[in-house]
Length: 455
Ligand code: S3P
Image (tube, rainbow, N blue to C red; front, side):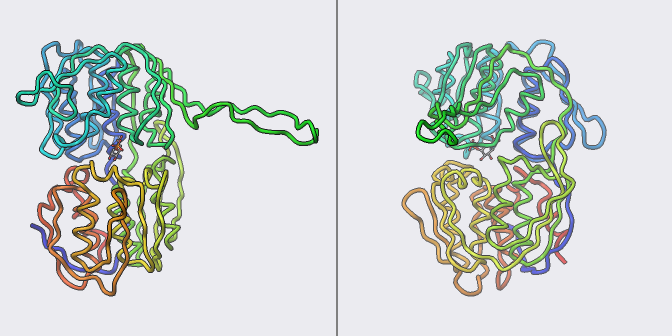
């Protein structure tokens, strides 16, 4: 139980640990690399430690190489015994690893904590089976059933090809398929109707894979009636197609990991609500991840970006956010998918804005570390906000006078705990939150960093 005191003046500069998604990929892809992977600024969160433990369990060595650098050394031969891998709370470890091991023909049993054991795995099992992978459920009494959740046994076999149109916007599913094809020597072509984070594509490119992101073909024809005009016809029925051709090997090399923009969102939100100013240097600015910065601008904040540079295929820069008078906004469709990890803090900001914030198309929030939609409705009602669910996949939030302190329920979900901790800075008294330590899943030094920008 942590006590959270109100605090209104927010100002300061921060430098954040490495992006969680990029860190996972650097560790897990080391399983396929011929040379060491040297990471700079690897995430210090428990989730990314699960990926490191997994590759160690399979035979790689992980060494500290200076203050903020890790050396992940390839295994001479990856383990041939059935490895038992506990992915903890980390869905990214479980899903991406399942893809790689299926292609490498390594048998393993992967499990997770109570929350991860309830999260859907059918979404990776189905496309990986299409590539040839075999799985077995290892839950009590279910050994012959097709697994739809952890624990599950991976039995290898993913050496075929696949053409797959993503039924749900998920970078984890996309990455599991891309990694399986890379490891298993097949070809995967993935169509994304809603674009998701592209760190896997960038890192595969960085490690020498044969990967291409295609855009639809366009035909320009002269207009018969007016030769000065051209008619434009799109020849394909998709917007983005990612094609990878695997051969089981990647090069490896250095990966410099920028600060995590999904963690930055909490500190920027504190500046936004408190009309303060926060600067974060070396922050990841991959365009598939920056929807939160656009959101801040759209609701009334100033956002300045400088020192833009791309290292290890990932853009980054120094970002300053200045808070202002916030207003509500409608979020749906592709925008909702791109903001998916930031919705908890977007919902908190909505409680301090003028007008309603309507968030639609976020059913995926129900299958994150907890049912984040329910957790938000429950907690934001406690502070006195007007909150309602919209059908099964949305939420509408409106401020109602001064927000009141509360005894928050984190549901052991790091992003719910961090979002409510930011809310508590602007309430009319002291609040509490249960199991605030769960922030360690992505940001163990969250409260220390937050203290450094409170004055
Ligand atoms: C992630 C993808 C997203 C995101 C998660 C990290 C990744 O999950 O919510 O925090 O690193 O690929 P989904 O693929 O389930 O949308």
